[in-house]
Length: 427
Image 1 (tube, rainbow, N blue to C red):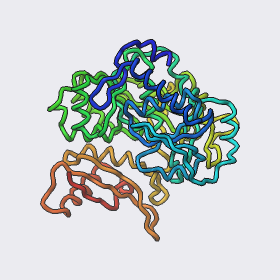
Image 2 (cartoon, rainbow, N blue to C red; image 1 turned 90 degrees about the vertical axis):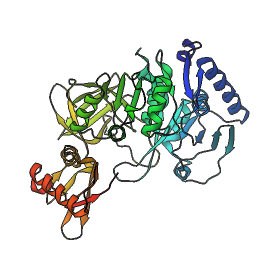
Image 3 (tube, rainbow, N blue to C red; image 1 turned 90 degrees about the horizontal axis):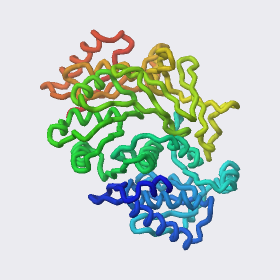
Image 4 (cartoon, rainbow, N blue to C red; image 1 turned 45 degrees about the vertical axis):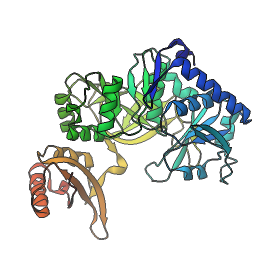
């Protein structure tokens, strides 16, 4: 709140074609705090809402934190997730309506939650599927997540590309609200046409996104229609960035800086530093983080670690280290090239194959627009490689597409890495 007050009447949120300044935000937060009190909601109570970023939902979120509630921003159409947390209230944020949530669940006596509630700190619950595919409820002490924003850094007019239920999205929101000259720009849609229009309209400076979106942006050529000259920085994370795609992006957007981000739902978003402007190797860490690499796997220890899973054992060892399961290449002096999750590795006849390696080779093929490589399993032969490929232009026959790809992969990959099955998906 102090940082918001320091912005005085500076525009701080752009939502639904309207700018709201810091004074507007503080007034709305105060209205919502009074409404929370009116509903007799107490410190430590769990309250959920389902909304994308907008002026009302952001105001409500901050009001809940100031009232020391435990907030649960839900993904769209995922109210069923409340079955695994003892949620007491559900809110519609526009207009604000708070109702008691009576759904029965199995976590009313959860010790981790009860001990946290006694502290009377603001809390946050997000959900992660984890490597097992089981949905996990992750409880955070929100005051720990805010520690990283104590150091003064430049603020940007920032597009909120990641959603409210994503820790990266909340991290982006906090940076836009707290840092000087920052502004949070809300989106109803996240396709290239909408995003590019909003960049031009709001003179956005920071686009935090994923390699997949950036690839779609290049294919759409929407940057030729809208003026993106205001963009200063594009950050990317959440998935592997192919070298070939990075080269295309830097060639197309020569006046924009690129920065790779890294984080997990269990400990938040870390600071990153690139090895050099032509490398995808990064140094990860920051004020509250320590890292180490064991057997090419990244381990992290953080002061911002989650309080715990509400429905699963803690993943930390006795010294507070967590195995991220991300495989990395150590390039020396603390710089790492992040390859991807251990769970994504394909075991072909006892040999490990990273999907990203094959995707990177396919990205160099002049007729390929995009690809996704993953494992499938045969009852007798075990795991094999599948590649879904999108062509920029299609040949006359599907068989010719597949033959073309097999020949291309044979020239550029060892035999065991050549996909056993190709699935053609045209634009």
